[in-house]
Amino acid sequence: MLIVPGTGLLTDVCGLWGWGPYTLFKWSLVAKLCRCKLLFVSVGAGPLHSALGKYFVKSALSLADFRSYRDKASLEYLKRIGFETNRDRVYPDLAFSLPEAMIPSDNGEKERRSVVGLGLMEHYGRPNVDSPSNAIYLAYLENLVVFLRWLLAHEYDARLLIGDVGDVHVTEEFKSLLKERSLTYDKTRIIDEPISSVQDLTSQLAATDIVVATRFHNVLLALLLNKPVIAISFHHKCTSLMSEMGLSQYCHDINHMNAGRLVEQFQDLARNAEKLKLVIRQRVEQSRKALEEQYRLIFKGI
Image 1 (cartoon, one colour):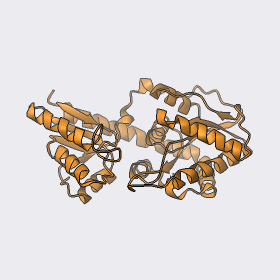
Image 2 (image 1 turned 45 degrees about the vertical axis):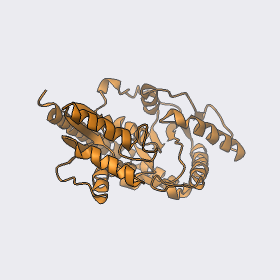
Image 3 (image 1 turned 90 degrees about the horizontal axis):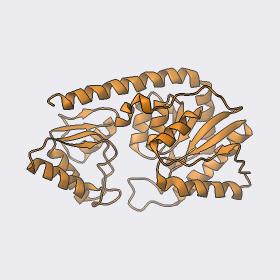
Image 4 (image 1 turned 60 degrees about the vertical axis):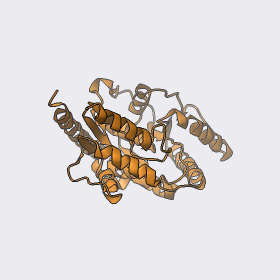
């Protein structure tokens, strides 16, 4: 059995080679030549810019004995590019089945002020645009500076978060921008600690009260920790996740950043935080049970 697990793997955004569609097709073909079962489990799809990318992805999927996607948007995307999905399934992102032993609990020790996790991400425009402009990224940072200024003025502290080592330089750019905009970088109010593992990230997320984040798994892991979240959405996977969790109104499009609207969403989220935590906890448990069902299904013959 060869399992292709999770992630937004069915894309050519980073090219055809390496982790791209050609390698995916090559390993899928090798698996079938070796008479292995081939399973695509809770994978994400799109965008695919090139004809070759679409060809390799559809060819790899056509060889599979089992296919499931982490959201309906991925399934619908594959339908639109001409792939037959009638026998395919939708199951939640695999991170929802992270072992509970790996999920830190809230230790109950509260800071003097509430802490907002601010998840930063390297981003250079729409993922479905071939040559995106840097303007979207700059507007993204500028609006987050305005939002952070509002947080500090309203007695919130902030914790800077990343979701990939590639985001480290974004944090440095953001802190430089704070200085340029005459926003004092107070290390007691703006917490910036290194993150180099999932454990680091979940521990730091656990130390927040509310999260405003961009990278997909910052949002997902915050939800897993039962934190009210605003997702700065850059891809259909973000809007799909928030919709499934009953939080559609707390999505903010990265291509149309507006600090004023972000503040309004945050105020609404903060007012309804306790009620939303009940909804989040219920949806997370449903996702965990759905993944257990999927694991039973794919491993029943072993």
